[in-house]
Length: 171
View 1 (cartoon, rainbow, N blue to C red):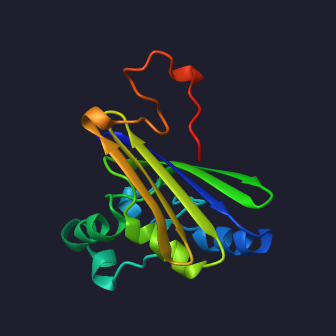
View 2: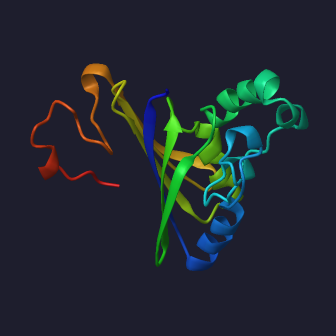
């Protein structure tokens, strides 16, 4: 069983631009044997932004896994996706196995939707690492990460901090 990396992606911009992003983001994981049995449509399918090559689609075990780790940053994309919508904002919550999505995914989203701002945060409390990446216009605006003794606990809170409930995590 893999450790779960908790993720949050907040996308901000005009409602029209957000709707275009939301429509593109919907999809089904291309490797069906790793997907939900009913192949249900996910609100955030990362391969809609970084398309795997044909060879990777045909053979997950031999090619696809390596492609996913190199380009998506984790082995199975975004899982257990939730989507909250507010005027001017989409907020996706999801889980990845072991590691967060790679920078390439968020940059691809930002390049394909240059009028939106992408604020991505992740937290893996089991292995004490977390981070934040902000992109807009296809450019990285901010990167921050912590691990080990410097672990912040951006989304889950620092496990050694007993006053965690009183903390506010800015997004």
